[in-house]
Image 1 (cartoon, one colour):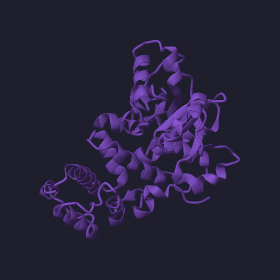
Image 2 (tube, rainbow, N blue to C red):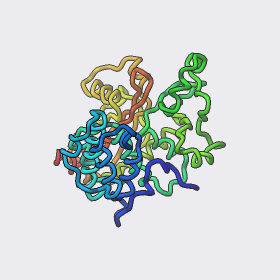
Image 3 (cartoon, rainbow, N blue to C red):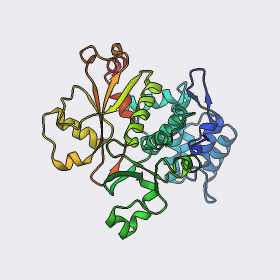
Image 4 (cartoon, rainbow, N blue to C red):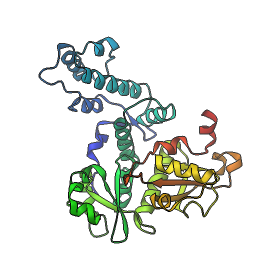
Length: 330
């Protein structure tokens, strides 16, 4: 077993006694190295001054006036977003707590930043994991997936990685995995670690295959780490075959489908075809759940959008489960 997801920046963060991530100067310096923030040669004096000061003291306070003095409008916007994220992280004891606050309070934040936080938090959650299927399934939390049926199997490939290859008419017509993408299997699983930051392995999400079970385990670990609640997640029947006592849509399309079933609408063939996964979630301790739902399962729905892309929203698990503390504080 080797390291994985070095691009998450987890090596740049510290961990507290509870195993959660804490902010460091080094972690923010990694953001300063991004091309969106590194001043180009034509940058104004105010931008260069701010950048240089933060390189020396990455967590030093920054005033609105310092950002307002930057001449380039795009640069000002980038700095506003970046400093807002940095200050939010500083204001919380851990990266995990900062992320939970962001999603519960629905604070405006570029989706890219949310994905990056999920990336590094999941790297912490899965530290020491030796199952390539689990790690590949967890990529779905922070990277959009393009789904296609290939030889009777439902295959998820990283949307960004396959974007250029998707321009091939033959690949598009036949629904083939694009060049350079291998579907994860028992024979090539050992290669996952050395290529994990390339996001170039696809995952079989067909019913009964290891991909769906691995995604269920990733959800279990995410919920336990973020909410300190132990749950079990297992595949279930599709909507229409069960009564929803409570449900969480794991993406926008899944939420729409769940709302329709909740309101008694029959799902059409197209909507059913978009459902990628349907899970039954149960709590190890019924006392953690709202009293009226203590003996009822929670269902999780995952679906693709009309464009064939799956954009998972793991924050919905932190805001949508019927946990006493969450519902009471909402």
